[in-house]
Image 1 (spheres, rainbow, N blue to C red):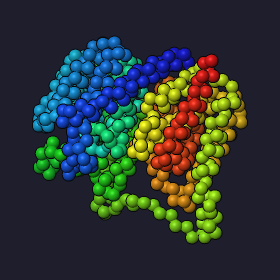
Image 2: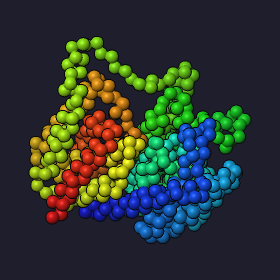
Image 3: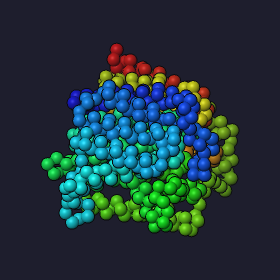
Image 4: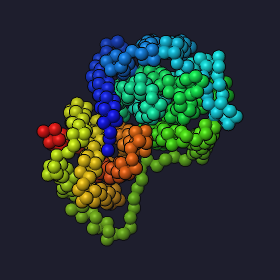
Length: 560
């Protein structure tokens, strides 16, 4: 399925991802103590969701993890030196702002300085905006450096202003990393492809502590660093060589459309009303969605989905004429904001709960019987045994799949919240979804010669779906199916693999269809697990341990 060339590249990318992830986990967990010692905490106010002071040194931990990983894993080429130099300036001004609350003008000056240093040290600048208006290529000539700085500062402020809900800025940045990596890879920009994978590992480690309810904030240090890193990568991907851009600027910009458009909308609204441009308010998209009655988790989930949509959209239309890409995306953005304005104008509020009221008494009587009420106790062990037992009697797999099993062992051992309480169950469910996805991947690819296995897996998936539907409709288990932001990120990543990753690495259609099947099979299994496990911490730990043993068997047999 995977050639040796691609396999070695994936091994390298996986290695640098794990180095940055491990550093991020360790340094982020230590940064809370630093925050309390230095008094760097985020105080609650009328604009903020939290009601108690929360440490906001996560950005410092992210910066340290990012820079250390780059020093360990990459050669210090001029591009990398430019990235590090500008990043150091952003972190410096962000840390000052977190500690002393700098004025907007001074913070703005720091952002400009970072962009200028990156551009001149890294020798990277925009020379063209492409044919975004349909009237020919827009060449920048001597305005290139000015436009480069303007674009980078705009993205930095966009990420800074989007950091309003737990996990929001980190999550949308992680989603952007998925797609920016692919654009960097297909355009042979290996330095920034590696940097963006390192950044993804850093964000993943931080989100373990920042997912709702957050234990730690990234502060302006983190949000500015994320905006700088994403904008620097975007500029590097579309930079010109002899006047011809490597990638269409609009294609890369669409990946970051959500935070950019939200910032532009808020700034224009303030200018029209004669308000100060940088004065904080509650007119950002996430604030408006909260006002519509949506919960914190629902708003983050919606914005993750929108960010993912723009990423998939950017990749899907990358070969279209640039002006069509621009106008079609503009139409989508206008439609989204018109929908939100319509809901606000008519004061339409989202229902807090969806109630089911079935009048078929004989069905209710049957499904409310004691065996249905206590079905979890029966279904859970049978389901787990049916799903994982093939690992123990099928023959050893190829070492490529054994390596995947060993990666999952490492992830579960180091990053699963073994000592976490109910507040970290959502993180546990995210890792369990990843474990299910990995199991199905191994089943569908390592044991493809067993023709009965795909039918067996589809049967388990359909039975799980039927059981979940019965529980939701007649036992009111719908709340158990609500997805956390951490779970949504893993789901987005799993669907990213067949629809984007496969085409970037030129995998064949059969591989793509098989991966889509894995994604489809995995969703009912996740739903069943969430209904079974709920917030029972010991159940989540027990299942994680069972997965751990299963992967240990697969990995051990493939190598021994």
